[in-house]
Image 1: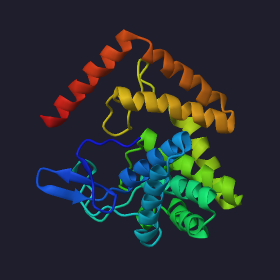
Image 2 (image 1 turned 60 degrees about the vertical axis):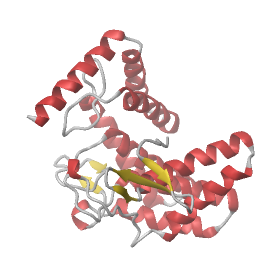
Image 3 (image 1 turned 135 degrees about the vertical axis):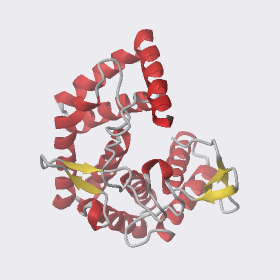
Image 4 (image 1 turned 90 degrees about the horizontal axis):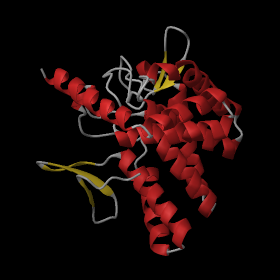
Length: 266
């Protein structure tokens, strides 16, 4: 979902981040999310203005891919990333948008660009990709291509969504293998994100997810279950849904998250 906070739409119809000093730069994730919002609005209303905006974002993704990646040209201090940097969330969301665009218009440039963007999932972070294999042989697709990996849950799953939609369109077995490798990792490690009352946002900062991201986790796990029929995903989706129904769980998650943030600042 596209968030308008600290975002402006430029004269070309593209979202651009704004900070205290003015324009900060283009975020491929914001562009892709804005594309998705317009695509959904077009399907729901049939209004051509949404289709036009959707295609504007797709054309930006086509024009701004560089060696198979969408790069960020501003620093990310929280994850110690210096510009330019890349991430699996942007790659996955961009692929999902482009495949939808290909299905809508039948323009091959969208599918070909999605294929280029996929290749980064077959390259390790140390080699300029977004893939990380841990000491157990588990394959992760990282929202931020940084070492050590942060293992952000929503970014990992969004990357898997992009890989899956591209496989559905191409039936390429290498793409299917990447998806299956990621699902195996998710099934094996999803318990590490469970606090017993809430879900973790990532495995580095160790703070409970915000309400928005916890809800997103529930939806994402439900979607993975729909795609794979994984009983593990169904179990955790239901478990985390129960946390949402508990005022005590919500309150505890908020308190613990604030404590963790305060400790990080000290």
